[in-house]
Length: 123
Image (cartoon, rainbow, N blue to C red; front, side):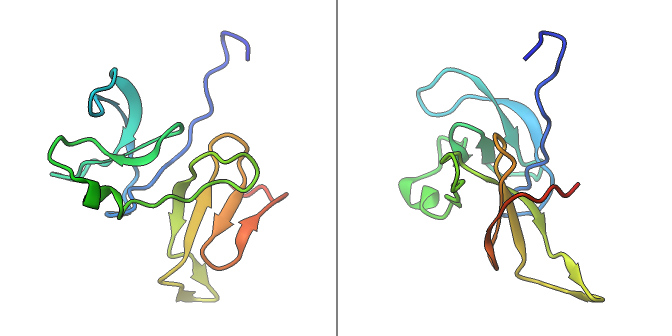
């Protein structure tokens, strides 16, 4: 990648609040400070990074909390996917359970309804 080219931006949603997450500096338990996406809702500790997927940043979080985090992985490269879209409209009615997951590396898509959606580029 040329030095002048910026990294591809993506729009991860918090799986709890369904709001767009923002880039943030976090200090995971016992690790070096890294950049990750963070939920902007008050008292929400949900974060997402390409290498870890969804994780909790608080020292107060417990192993049982981590069991509730989504662990959707890309079929093609094993990268943790992020929640990109929810509740899409279908012919005038809302599909309340719809979830679209995307891979930040290869842009593969997966939904809770149809599995991996490949070869299609939606914007």
